[in-house]
Length: 113
Image (cartoon, rainbow, N blue to C red; front, side, top):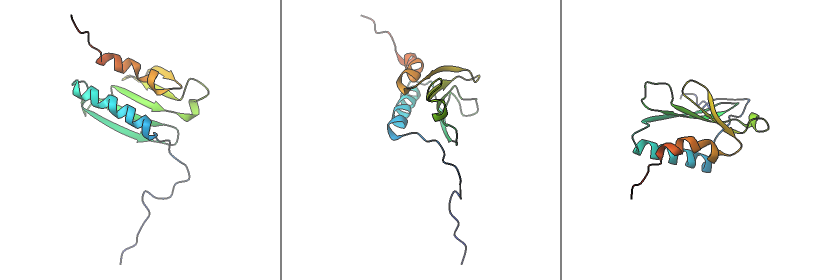
C-alpha cells in the first residue's frame, strides 16, 4: 500500500485570505467587467503577507489590475490596495468599496434622453 501525505504539506505560517463577502464583491465586479468585454481571465494568490486578485484583459498579459488585501498595512495606508498594470498603487484605503470605485466607474455609461 502507498503512503498518504498531507496536502499541501506542513506550513508554519498562515496565508492571508479573502473573507466570503470580500470575495463576493470582487467576483461580482469581475463578472460585470467580463460581461462588458473588458476582462477575460483572473488569478487569485494567497501569500503570508497578502492576498491578491489579478484581473487580465488576455491570459498572456500582465494583469490590468491587482486588488490586494494586506493586513500589515492596516495602520498605515490601508488594508486594501488597487495596483495598476505597471505596479503603481492607484488607490489605497481601509475599506474595499472606495478602492474598487475607479474600476466600477469604467462600467458607468451615460443614458440619453
